[in-house]
Image (cartoon, rainbow, N blue to C red; front, side, top):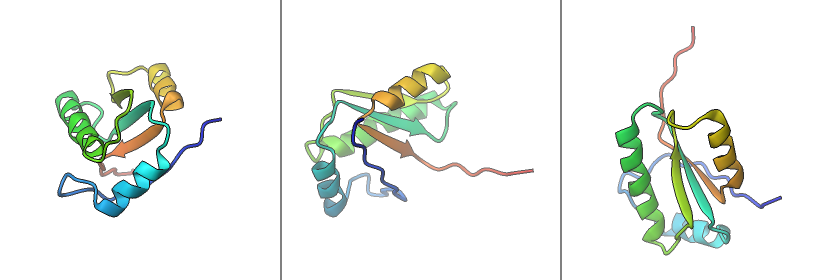
Length: 102
């Protein structure tokens, strides 16, 4: 089984990782085969594609390149999404979304 890292972040308004967070990510993410961004806005494909590139740029700024990158949204089947998550070296839950319960 692959070792995984789980991190929770409240956002990066500057669109850059702070030095301490970047250092910890770089130290912990030794294996960088695949990064998966899970969208909070599954139907907003244009935003998702733009956010994917913007978030990935934050990793590249700190010399953390991944062999593959992708966003999971409604364009993916459940099976495709599961497989992408299963193979991922890093899973990044992108954004937040308000939910209401009835």
